[in-house]
Length: 513
Image (cartoon, rainbow, N blue to C red):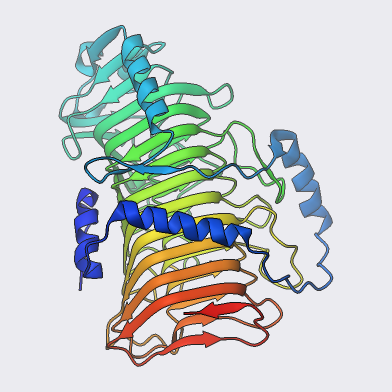
């Protein structure tokens, strides 16, 4: 069985997916095929949802939503981003040339290149370098080089027009000082309220030094604090070749100024835009490895997240995901990433009192021993007494692998799944390989679950093998909060004792080929 450790090089994921799926796919053709399925899906008028009288929102929650609306704006779904494939088979969003132009602009605005040692920086693992980084960065328009060593700091704030460049993962380490507070962000941009732009970070390890806290029940404070790297209200940002170690909350958080809970149909002001994360590693995170909130046009590629601590949550209830595309995020592209031993490999979601992520595209992902390899949901919009989600729309995912989803101590009551879709509409899953273990007891649970008022879901080219002690390969749940308008095409189940497809009561609109 495959094991991906914390140093896994995710740049090999494209090749690994060919081995796992036992086929060499033409990714350009699969993208085109998936787009055609998506356009057809969008045109379909889904079966209506069954709605009981909604439960009234408590007064305190309604009051808090009104307060958050002071810092919010109406949510709307953008046009999905087209994808293109270059001559080497690399997949990019259509807006990447715009980001490349802004990178050239950043390089032209850098007026000096300095070494942190020239400003008193010492990488001995003891000296406090906070003041040295502040002097070296100044007001921006600078590239600060950091040589090999361990550089202690109480936090680094990056102004606009800045490059911070180390000698590589494991060579240059920036580590939080023993006296840094629990809420410290190791690296972040200088002004979350006014925003920053054109910030580039490359080639280093970021050690949040969770050990300094000793034993605490919770390793994070609130909002987008307590992370290794946070971009909040950043336009044109890059993070490349960076490792994040044991953050209290997130390894990498691409965020708005504040998280916002103004209700479904609203999203935060001050979100980040046009950010590329590439070749990142992260582990030991208290919540999620990579996360996005209320931000648009985000590209995440060739990155690997594994082995969360889950310590930002109550023990046994840790929703710690490798990659989480969260509240209000729009037009996010994930390419050839991987996750291992998390609660969720990729979770696309929102909280009840926020808008859901929309227009999320996944091209290649490997999930190994995650509890729920792929988990798409809008919490609080699942029951027949919940309001219908206004924002949970448009997910396309292709060339996926789920390898032995398992029960986990992170979330002790969560049953393992290869895929769960809840509340979302217009979801396309194309070319998906799921591999279990013939001796693992899944306690009669299905491998794929389409449930909780999901609509317009298309599963195509699904391969399931080595699940013996489980329920159905694919289960479409019925009942009052049933899924509906589901299309299932080209499913292969082998080396398993599963029922292939299980359709629940009252499901009205289903097509199986």
